[in-house]
Length: 398
Image (cartoon, rainbow, N blue to C red; front, side, top):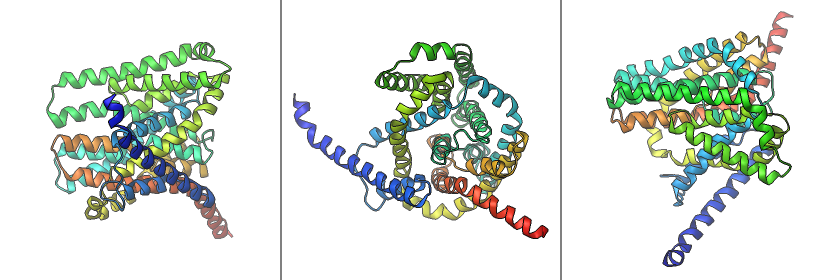
């Protein structure tokens, strides 16, 4: 009873601040919708303004918002997975290995070289290569939804690269952790084996039993479908994270496992919940960045963004060509993949926690924030840019 009496003032403050923040995000979304561009950069900048060291820091529980942000990521990937079947995913991965390797070489190399030039140790250079390599599944899923490209011809190529990257992270993170902390090789082996086994098991279930699961879980009640899908996504994502696999990959595979009328119903009932938590995710990301720490490293981050945006465009274009895509579809692949996000921050956190190089955190934060802003803008600009290039070519021929 004493706890109930003591807690209302804090709860009231949290509700007021969260309510005001959510209404603010709604206004930003209205503004973005009015002028026809992505709201993601505005969410990030709002987080930057109201976070630690911002214009008006908010004091609500960051732990609470962090949980909401993580839910936002897994729901984004779940709804993206609903667009595809298990056979489509396996075919995409089978044909997308070359594209994944090209993506790795083009985008890991700039970060590793930059770290070595700065005089950072080789293990930190490897970590920074990972930061510039991996795209943000959460941001890209949101961009595809905003642009109505979830079922576009180039989206399977984008998804196969994202899944390849996330699976690569399942191998990379345990190995990097061992290198940074000096743990035994057996720990790395067990982590990697567990990651591969978990992904293989969930994919096997999706392929073999997906239609049966869909029939078993189907129901005419939207409430039951909402609770069932939300519970499954969180459960599988949590188990995936427990065995060192991306929670986003787990959520994506749950979406893959559902098919038919259930997939359409799940997409409809989950979408409003997804949009709420996705906005929280981008806002929370901005909250974590201290503006004062960004200024000294901004020039370096801007150079890295320019270089790695170019390498993503090139590797995306090449990957699209391997999938027999051309024209604006090929340009869309590279432009959509520019955004970096959650994995890059996790990698930077590992390097900082191990005491390897304290500057990694501020450089990574500035880099990821800029990429998260440039990525959605570039994805939206792909069509008009390609149209402009085509007109220029036509005029030159004449």
